[in-house]
Amino acid sequence: MPDGVPDSTQARAPPASRHDPSMSSRKAFAVSLLGAALALATLAGLGVRGYGGNVSALLHVYRPFGEQFAMPPGTVLYEDGGYDGMHYYQVARSLPALVGAHATGEVPLFDETYRYQRILLPAAAFVAAAGSEERLPAAILLINVVAIVATMALFIRATGAVSVHAFALVANPAALIGVLYSLSEPLALLCTTAFLATVLRGKGTLTPAGALLLALALLARETTLLVTLPLAALFVCRCQWRDAALALASLIPAALWQGFLLLRFGSLALERSARTLALPLSGPAALVLDTLREPTLYGLSALAFLLLIALPIALIAIERCFREWRSPSVTTVLLASLTLSLFCLHPEIWSVITAVGRVVPALYPVFAFAAAQSDTPRDRAASAAMIVVSGVAAVGVALVRHPFTLS
Image (cartoon, rainbow, N blue to C red; front, side, top):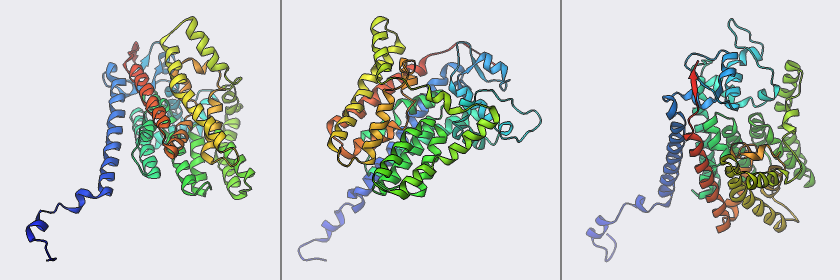
């Protein structure tokens, strides 16, 4: 026993684990991930609430489309239109026919090459559902929820803290709309976040693993080109020839897939994607004018996105460009590129948050890492605004009950 320290004092000493910062961090980490998963599950529950809990409601299958392609019995068919989720579902159903593995009773293809280029989600869902059409809707939902939670986990591990920016990676338009509409954006968010983590860990260099993650992100969403090409250009300007070669090599899987689709359908899938761009600021300008002339809920949702998400990110990007103009970081170059692309989107895309908020999903992880690096009150306010606007919009979307029938 040390001098002057009675046994009773030692006996009453609290366990060291109670004051272990690492234990507190692990607890915060686990609670954050659990909270994110529960929030996403609740949102999905709201989305299927009006359809008897039928998960196929999240596919947003338009009745004529469902009848044309003979959806499985019990699939929710909307009477007032469909959305991209029904195309991802159909691509997943038709994968064997697409790649030539013909079988009796194969599912027919539809002649829209553009829809087939985002192959990562359909392929993952097909594997997760073991080829079962009936299990595909649940597989897509599970993949998207897991992808978003994993995105948050990777970000927290990379930045070393549970922050408002980590929650912005869960509650952004691309993530939440991706869950509610069965879209590929959550997988794009996951792959982009993992890629950025490897680049930042390597202090601005690209590893083969990072190149592979970038390639997967491109197979999830073709707008990942807005990450790959500026990154390769930055590496060339820095004479980082190995990194530039790896960045360009990440294009190979998508290029091969585009070539396969060209041979299969006779048209280039990226051609339509290129038509989503317009003159800079023409989209936001049209949105403001249309909303002033005839306000609608759709227009107001996009206006909230413009004022509370897009403009704050743009101001942060501009400030970083001025501050780092001599030697811009990877984060700053990508943030500037993606923000500029956002403001060059076609006016039609800028008409509603469910469109403009998800077209450039890579913007959100790039912004989150940039905001975590400086972590100023302005950065935290921008992330908080993103969470609020995205959450309100997502709940509003989930509560809309569409007229429907069952196949």
